[in-house]
Length: 600
Image 1 (cartoon, one colour):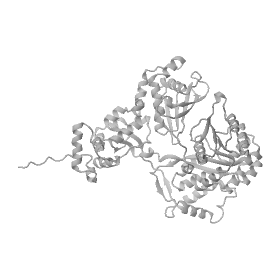
Image 2 (cartoon, helix red, strand yellow; image 1 turned 180 degrees about the vertical axis):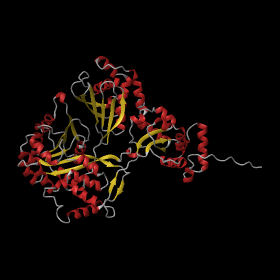
Image 3 (cartoon, one colour; image 1 turned 90 degrees about the vertical axis):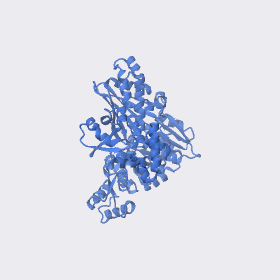
Image 4 (tube, helix red, strand yellow; image 1 turned 90 degrees about the horizontal axis):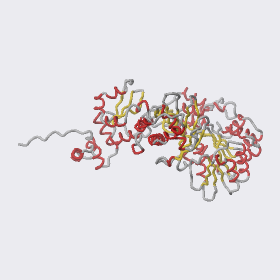
């Protein structure tokens, strides 16, 4: 008599056989090997077959009846969600909270059924009423833990390192003991870990914000232009942490009454080859704030990758390829001026040109450029180096910042003697930059002769791919048209009062940006990839003033900003807001973001 074969036990990976990726026999052999070796089925499958995480994720999703979420490199550590949970605990339990959304707390799991059954998540987050569970692969679960808690290879998780600081005592009034505490091995590892995690989360700045008394010190990261909470440090460690950062950038640890600034070459202290600009500022309650700017490194971005519109790109290239003259890039701190400047230099960097740059600090390096670093302690400033450059046979000179009369005057002099000079300014718009430079004491006739153009820019958040398109009605479109041209009111370029002008503008947009002849706008929604913000990354908005003969004549007459602005837009200048609104029409951003960065 033939005995019936035992029923085959179903696995979460049976979908691989259904898809035809492998047979049930091959899958059962992997299950058997898993039992014999003690390794997970996923590990054995990955060792024998070239499987993508999405293939495994689709099987898990079908088996558990939960959505699959892959690894998201943009997730940030949240003190509210992750501060109370140790990595060892969530690793053992197989779940981790990701972010809060209107539909509830998103929880990433290896086994959603088991996590729901234990009811541990609602106990840990009693204040939250709704929960959404998603499944992921074991490998991506580990990657997510590394992202949120830090990679153990870099000295342990951020929470473990914080717990290890308990042995450090508060020595705020004793400089000798404070320096000793700052050299404590656990504190050194903790500070290094904060910097490394900020870098891996693509933060541009680290804000360390101590509070007086026994209140905790908050640490926040600026990611894509927005500050996000990172972690809180107990009060007794605050001064030792600040002292450690001062030691790293060779500042006076005894001076707490005056602001100080310095730089950290992090490769001396950790595995990352990055540089940080550090500013300490005494704040209320006898504490010191510290802000660290993570300086960009690597190759410059190609000029055509900066997001310049076709018209602005063509006019910019034509202007910067002149043999001599003066060209400025302007905007507030953090608007990407240095990045744009090095993209311009990359475009002009050929073997037959000698290019000198003086910067504070040197953030981006290029082969073929001769770059000089400012050192104020040694009395090496922009003006001193500029005078040296004029004796060093340059073709192109780039000055990191024109912040005083002498530096600007030397730039004008160099441009009038046959050199191409580039520099940056901290001003709001291209026309305003002209009056700012004249206010520094420049001779209007020499300055007008030297000036080639001024490029103003801002950085605006980009919409994530989860955006949702919609067709605006006639009223919304008319309001958009009115706002687009509002800056041009009372200038010769204002035409909306003329019959048919608004319709012509809409028709041009439909031809340039429309889908099937329809203009589309986009709502931000939010997903795991953008940390539920609706935005991911940033892009540039630009405004180029070209020094035409009419503009030069107005400069010589010391004309008002409004007159220069009118002449510039009549000559084809697209304002920052107009450029931003055209990028709204392209689906790159939304009007709220444009208004935020281009507000008057």
